[in-house]
Length: 124
Image (cartoon, rainbow, N blue to C red; front, side, top):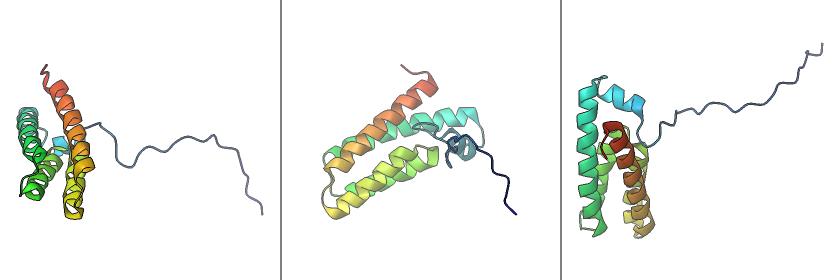
């Protein structure tokens, strides 16, 4: 028996993980239990912390891997997954001895996350 075949127009599958941009809003809401005030607070704290940690990393201190690890954890906690991935990349690059490109990637990811946070918080 031959199955009845019909032509089906191709359409892309949705991504397995939704792309919310620099901040995963779903993850942020789960981590803050949907508390909008808490979301705003942790986003502001992360934005400030990310700048401070990135400034420290620019001079490659002796504890650069620990600083990158701290940033990675903070980023994951608020849904800044691109920042977390870039910080993890920097950790690996520090082990391999060539962190320049990874640091640039992290700087870009932090800038994008901070821009998204500023938009979300209505900050100019």
